Image 1 (tube, one colour):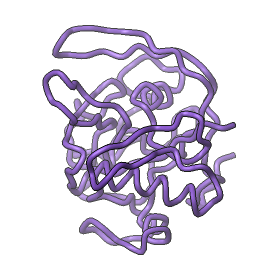
Image 2 (tube, helix red, strand yellow):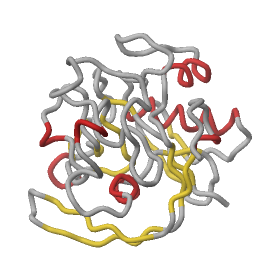
Image 3 (tube, rainbow, N blue to C red):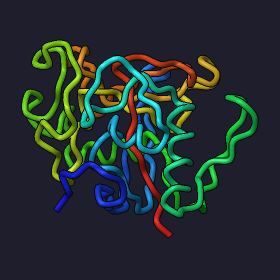
Length: 226
C-alpha cells in the first residue's frame, strides 16, 4: 500500500522489468526499450520535501503538498544528489562545474531522474491507450484544474499506485530530447495543469533547455536498487 504521507523512500514504488516502445514524431521512428527493475516515486516531489532538503521554495504557488515547480533540470539532479546524501545513498550524478557537465553513475543506489522509457512504462502501468483511466479522474489539466496547480495525490492513481503521472506538472526526465536538432534540451513528460487534454497522454513528449524554469514543470524521482 502506498503511503499518503509524502516523504521519500516510503513512497517509492517497485516497478517490475518490462518493455516499452518509444516513438519520435519528427523522425516517425519507433524503438523498443528493455527495462530492468527500478523504483519510481508515487508522487512528484513536493514543496515540503524540496524545502526540507534545500531550504529553498522556488516557484509561485505555496503549499506543502503542492508539487514543487519552477525548478530546472539542473535543480532536479542536484536535489536528487542532496537527498541521496541526506539518506545515506550513493549519489547518482557526478557534476562537473556549474551547469556544464554531468555523468550518471548507473551503479549508484541514490535518487535520480527516470529515463523517459522508465517514465512511460510506469505511466502506462500495463495499459496501451493514451491514458491509464478517464482523464478527469486521473489528471489535473486545463479542463478541470481551474488553471491552477493542485496538491499531489488528489486524482486516482494508476494500477501500480502512481499518482499524477498525467497532468498537474510535467516531469523532467534524464534523456536528451534530440541532440541532432535541439542540442542539450531534455525530455519532459506527462502534461500539466494548464495543458489541453491532447498534451496529457502517456506518449506525449515535450522538450526544454536544462536551465528552463516555469510554473508547470516539476519532477519525480527514481532509484536503481542494489
